[in-house]
View (spheres, rainbow, N blue to C red):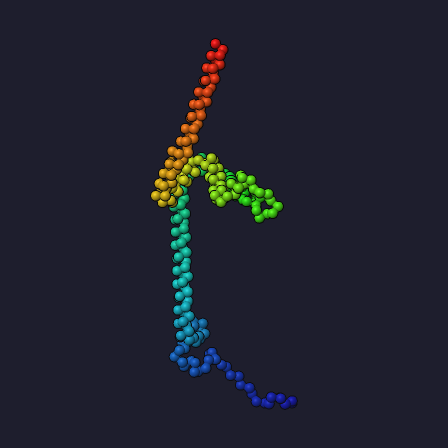
Length: 233
């Protein structure tokens, strides 16, 4: 019989029951032991558990606040859009035919007119001074590239196209801006200046000049006819 290298002693197997936790930690009042229904034993720190629970509750509250604020802002934005749509339908988009057939094409053509005005008022298209090979701009080019023209020409072209295609909507836009956007004293001053310098000024002078020219032309034609008639008789 061969002898065993490890000797003939019997090795006793010891079984460790429960978690391998030092007794000092288990006896600490900061630790709490909980037995689960499955038979597993949990040892946890009371302070750490309390802190983690507090952080979790704070995070949940923050998420709830953010979600509630988001829903509130969504509802407010939805109500605001509904109010804007109702306002536009009541004050601006009052013509059914223009709304269905002409508003979108008119807006597209007005945008094209605006960019055409930008092209016409661009100094590079009339011979800029920065280019030494470019010629001197003509008088028309100097007028079109002046600062007032560069600001007003694109707006004037776009407004004219939009007014010609959708006159009712254009008039409603102007009336709405004057009534609800601009200050009333400013609107009154603009109307007074318009009536003073254009309606009773330039427009009236133009009408008077046209009337005088027409009367003078009729008198001249009458004089020529009478002269010819007298010469023939």
